[in-house]
Length: 143
Image (cartoon, rainbow, N blue to C red; front, side, top):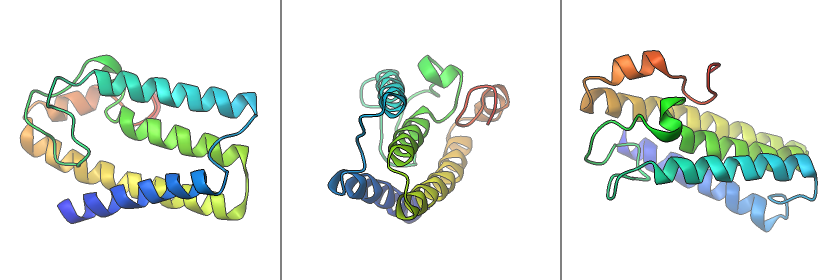
């Protein structure tokens, strides 16, 4: 499980690096910029919701209580939502087959990582099942 988590994180970072190096990460389109700003705001809000020492880039949660404040009161995985919104905003601003393939790969990798992380969370926090019934994974009130 930990190996899957680390491999997934590597794939996500390589996709962002490719989009940056190829000039496909940023756009002058106001819609792309709006999507990216929304993504960054969500990422900052999600990151700031953690207590000191609780944030981890690994799927296995760090010590602490189950986080259910900030964006976590609406969605279980705002950091993944941030990554998906940022990458798909970039891709839609520079639509090409290679970029769409990268987006689909990243989306699949994030889906696997969410499943992996939720297994860790269910094992660590007894109240995670109830929390997951009340919140959506990525998009508030939808998914």
